[in-house]
Image 1 (tube, rainbow over the protein chains, first blue to last red):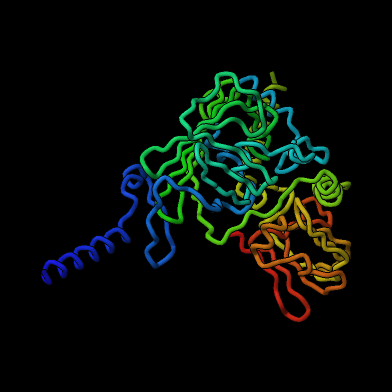
Image 2 (cartoon, rainbow over the protein chains, first blue to last red):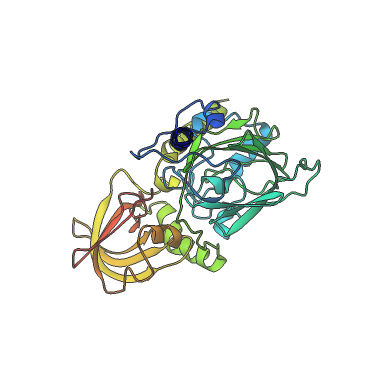
Length: 267
Length: 131
């Protein structure tokens, strides 16, 4: 009896130690690159079918394009005409009277909101995952009740999204139903209302999600836009703050900062 | 034909310029982030609001040029996470501020990148650490 108890205790301890240190095996096999961790202590494993919490994209710390210039596919005639007509408020094509929609507090929309240096929060509820963006204090539901994407969704700023789990550690989200009024980034890359977006949020350990996004928009681009993989980190004490775009504040900022900085020198 | 070639060339050069700027902080090559400068002066206004907090000061650069400077930083949320609050800077404060100046020579700058910092007369420092 005593031997059996001792044996069971040792076995239980071994199992607990093994579980504490093993990686998310299902996710590990899908990895093409190992995420870098700078902590010395081993990180806890990923939770199964759970991406709740506040997540921060670890990028440059500033607004980014969806993909570097070299990775952007050629535009169609429609796409090119739109790009040429845009007057960015940022970057080398910036002009004082820029028409970037966000300068007048139009929503950044989806997917542009994903490439801004502010966090988001996932909240999981029955039949849906809610994604709250600090940017603009906006949110979108991701339907996980098994429904398929609508064939003719109304065009909206943030789209219509459905999600499903691939294994236990990857949330795959597909979305459609976008209007064509948002840019893919501050340089003015357009998209049409036929855009379809696929995202993969792969939780590889307790604190890390590997994020991949593909934009399929044959009306604007001759091939899909495949963005480079991005790393998101959990912020256990993170809180989404209020960041509402207020027209009067935006306008004052444009007059006092953007326009003087973008004006051509008078020399 | 020549015009088409010129247009294409200009377009390609602009794309290359955009490419160069995309990796810069703020995605905004209106600021020269490779050559930050430090301005010393007296704060006249600290605007704690979206989209970007702003610091206005009567300042002097290291060549002694005096100007009314307008400096943009990050959103209140981001600054909160870097330990700032709405009272971190007050009108009348004597500060030196490191910023990326506007390329067009206007007294406008961006202090919201990792190099941006503000040093007060008593020696305490407000920094940015976007990660």
